[in-house]
Amino acid sequence: MTEFPKPADEPAVPPAGSVRRNGFTRFLDSVEWLGNLLPHPVTLFAILALAMVLLSGLFGAMGLAVPDPRPEGAAGRSEDGMIRAVSLMDGEGLRRIFTGLVSNFTGFAPLGVVLVAMLGIGVAEKSGVLSAVVRGTVLGASRNMVTLAIVFAGVISNTASELGYVILIPLAGAVYYSLGRHPLAGMAAAFAGVSGGYSANLLIGTIDPLLAGITEETAQLIDPNYGVTATASYYFMAVSTFLVTGIGALVSIYIVEPKLGCFDSSRAEPELLETEIMPLSALERKGLRAAGIAFIAVLALMALTLVPEWGVLRDGETGDRLRSPFFTGFAVWILVFFTVLGFAYGKVVGTIRNDRDMIDGMSKAMSSLGLYIVIVFFAAQFVAFFAWSNLGAITAVNGATFLQEMGLTGPALFVGFILICAIINLMLGSASAQWAMTAPIFVPMLMLIGYSPEVIQTAYRIGDSTTNIITPMMSYFGLILAWAARYDRNVGIGTMIAMMLPYSIFFTIAWMLLFFLWVFGLGLPVGPGSPTYYTPG
Image (tube, rainbow, N blue to C red; front, side):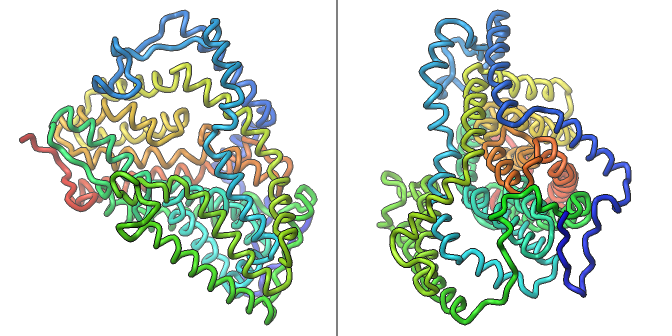
């Protein structure tokens, strides 16, 4: 087992064996132990996909159905207004499986994003610019400030979520390793910010107008003239950025990192262990200056395609900036960004001499994704079968109906609402898909009680964010697991869930407390022009 030296003025994180075993730590140990009894993630997703086929046949034969809460004429709504379990075991279902197996895999959204982005990252890694940036950033920084910065960067990066998942999380592992800390602790801190803090940000992201559109459509079932803007929850989400950053850093420093203990390098891929914290040379500093100029040039190019009225990457019909090719195709910008930075740095320091060097970097990056690609194949089948069977939608509707039948009308209703959303999120990972199913129930119901659609949407987003990091249904969970396995080949789903569960618990508690203080204690609006209460007329 390898232990790294720590700076003399900072205490070392104690190894796992010396950590005091309190009740919470023992609980996490139990979660990890139980979770790791599960088979390999690839095997698990294959079993789940098969189980989904069998369950769809069972519930389809039973005629399981629930009323569709979406308004008439909504996309995907059946003519009789019912959501029915669809069997994948009959002839039509089996034909759909055989014809869709390949497209399920190739059309799995995170796969294309990751593959395209990794081409650019491969060039940047080959050039050495990432290592130089890391060394230039962390040298002299205190350990707690590094953790705080990683969580904060994760929250901000979810404006373009692929950036955080594909780049920040593995980079955080490299930063921690370079500092002599456990790489998985760094990855956990980044993952908590990127995904657990998905609904907190200082910037308006692509998810904001999407959710606002769904909220507005369902609010108009009660008030046909009601409008909801993309900034409906902005004030609350901006303040939440600092809450999530602080809670995430504290959980990382005082719970996750001590529990992980010392890093055993014998279980890691050898090439990941070549990073050393060495002062930057004069040539490397010159290369970083060239990379800085390239960075500014790429930002200018990005601005020119989006900001002006004639920006070519704005929506071609509406001119909208948020719902535009600029953001939907953000993986291309990641490719361009890291290719240009890597090339500029590499030409100065001599690590990129010609096109062959760039191609070698791309090839090496692709070769590191073998496990992820295998996981994705089976995970994509499970997610597709789950959607085809309608069992996810039925679960969402039943959960929302249960809360409605509880009969609560006061602010305490939002506790159950947030928790129900968090539970549904474990099975229906897409924020927009989940809200499209549940908003037609929750928004009209809570509007009639007297709460505004903006407040309802804000509460939903808390529940939707906090359990992203503990569910394999989250699209990028397989990618994070594959990154973690490069540092520890024994990492399983149980390890990941136990590592991330403290974030989920403390995010949920702290975020709900902030919500009740903000909305009902201080009576503050959740966003510009967003009322707390709905008054008809």
